[in-house]
Length: 441
Ligand code: S3P
Image: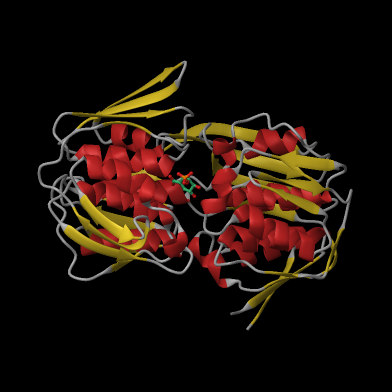
């Protein structure tokens, strides 16, 4: 495993563009793979997770070609046109690919075997197996919830009405995608609105989909057996990837960084008000629409950060950004308390346990709660000098790369490879701004 060493090297300066949004890239490949005709996508994220989705869609019949850097063309098979792959599908590290594709498979008359890496094989799939079984799919999983899974989709799916017990865009999207090839109306209720890229893209492609906000949350309905129109799409930069340079420039003294073309879907941007509530200097410039999603440029300058206790946003709007926010809290003035975050235990790693261990290994005092962390900020540099175990989690690796910028002694990350899943250009891009990240082979 190549180790990654992150040393203190302020300030960060310059202008960058982060790669395309991961959530939107997955959906672009899946939905254009079901459209009738040729779709074209620019700025697709070419990380391992999205490439796993491309491979799976190819295995089920879609024609997908890479034409250039981030530029892809897709010839869809039409809704209802997926075929059984002739081999096991390996989803690598990608929970989004696995859960959303299971949705598509459930309402097609196909049979699929899916597996993944050690991290993905430890993540619960019961949350999608349960509603997808109601459509009539027969799904068998190890211990009822873990990969490998066998999915026998149904050619005669029944529409369902489902209330998601967890705030999860993956569960919501799996149900909507199964509903896409199901006659009649499928209804999904969520008590907290989660990222709505699936709904936006389906609507842009001509599906009959409605979204209603009400006092108890949000209801999405989709009329199935639609024909999807192909799309030409430019994928905005990923706010979740932007969070790393955003926090890095906030904590590294004297920094001034412009992150261009970042997706600012309001159900994704919680990290910005949270950082600002901690005293960060972040401004949004040049707001506009791109590919049916709001985008803008993020201008961030270094600031003295304060601890945070009450989040001004719902956690689902920044669910992937907590690891790097925990690192920001470790450098802040005061004690931060984060609760209500039990979902973090079932991400690519147990992000509460793994973050607590990594911070403690680098001299930060942390109390681990069942549903959160209490982090004693160092009001400046953390001691550092520790080794972080990433447990195949890209966001753990990148978060501690950021913390190294504000550490007395370099921080060692045990494995740099998980970064390839979502942000292959991360190290070059950060070093281009002035960071000191070194991979040891
Ligand atoms: C995603 C939804 C979130 C997020 C993941 C991507 C998506 O997962 O953590 O990285 O693209 O729908 P959950 O639905 O499990 O919250």
